[in-house]
Length: 361
Ligand code: ADP
Ligand code: MG
Image (cartoon, rainbow, N blue to C red):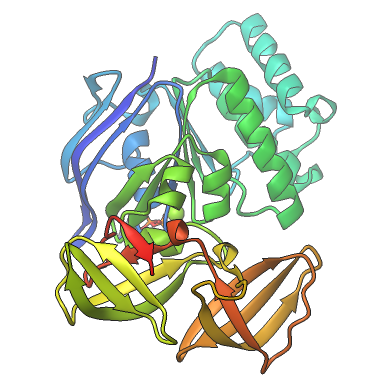
């Protein structure tokens, strides 16, 4: 069992406040990903959980036991860093054994754990090599192996794939997912890459400037982002935002004119003149059929990717991106009418908070 609970956690370095009032419940066996832009406090939060730093305020508990004063070595957690942090003068086998020898585990038990981890990670052929004789991907597996042999109550991984090239990142990502499936341990994984977060996580924690913006499953964040930041951060290319304002209200609905005769209705109670942002993902735009409500735009750039066509366009002075399926003939200067399903629209108030209920007229 390994639930990890954070309550009212703050962290400052001198006068610099880095984390603000972080509350989080991580369930036993869950794969949780911390995601957010560089510098938002992801590593700091992970280090607090690991016990490598102390919170300035608040409580951290593992399985209901407060660990604020428990040293890192006694928390039963294992951490994997981007930098691998392997001992260069030791063989892979010695690297894997090192922490276990220090904890005075019997030799046979150490051997058994190394054999098991090496098999799981397919690094058996390299056990007698040194890290310098391995590729980046192999080194990262050894670093993960070193965590596995410790049989931790939870794994903490800080951007473990950032040093790998794009192709290897994708395959190693799949291996980490398979590993979690197999060992079912609690894992906390830090990344700035929202695709990694979406593909790996049971639940994603989106951080910005030291605060949690939203916690949810990948699809909860994608389908109902709680604010404009999350809406723009999750999904690639990022969501289009069209700035509008309330043209009129009636029956608890506000009408947002989007130019070209197109209007969108949102529920709630924004007042006439209030600013409202309408969001729509590039993949949710399509070539409009005749007569359907559409954004009338002018094409400014076309990217032909073969499997899809990315169209950059301007609608009423606002920049838009549409990802259209397949190969479509468009060129800069073309007029294009972009349709959408009203159910795929998002709307945000002047403070960036999601408005529930958006409809198209
Ligand atoms: P992330 O991992 O999300 O990129 P970090 O947690 O590393 O971000 O850092 C968050 C903020 O805290 C940054 O502004 C960073 O400069 C600051 N910070 C991190 N560690 C220290 C430290 N030991 N002393 C002072 N400031 C720090
Ligand atoms: Mg970091």
